[in-house]
Image (cartoon, rainbow, N blue to C red):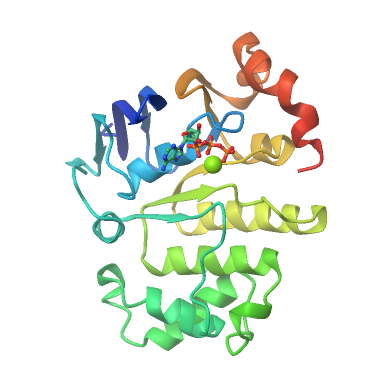
Length: 247
Ligand SMILES: Nc1ncnc2c1ncn2[C@@H]1O[C@H](COP(=O)(O)OP(=O)(O)OP(=O)(O)O)[C@@H](O)[C@H]1O
Ligand SMILES: [Mg+2]
């Protein structure tokens, strides 16, 4: 079976710092895979290289059978890979509906003749139905995350990358958002790659984990194996549980 995404020996150096070092993995269609690792492990840098925000110093990324070399972020989106950010980035000065309509102008959404209709539908899908006229500036953080997901879905992605979707959310907001991610995976046939520090929710969502430390992949496997892996325990779970307990 051809992989949807193939990351082969990808490295990113910033001057003397190697943020990502020889990372290799594949994603099959329909998987929910998680990227785990302590702060500074290189997770977001990896996402930046997959999505055209940064070019790898070395290595290759192949998506849907095509190399992604030297593409700008919008070109990666047009090939079917969309992302959300660790910090939300809505268009301020626009309401929720307008924020999603802009994303519906993406070439992959060409078949959606009525952009406003499609945007309304997407808002409903992420649990923000009927709230299109609200300004983004007053939106609680949990709803901003849902808006970001709606904007990513508007581009009709095959692969959705979520960078810490639960960051900054209260405990009552996390479980419903996890349910939304599960629902989208099921109903939209999405392949999902997500970074998250909230371990319990993370492990319940993903079927496979890519564990990183100091820019390198230290283990790949199902969550039940990863939590028992001594390298992962040393790098992440043992040392940083306290640091993230209140995150
Ligand atoms: N644009 C940049 N220029 C220089 N160094 C960078 C840049 N972006 C990231 N780094 C460094 O690369 C390393 C990896 O950072 P990255 O943001 O990828 O980590 P992360 O795993 O996403 O961490 P966190 O869990 O805190 O979000 C860090 O040491 C960071 O300071
Ligand atoms: Mg990060």
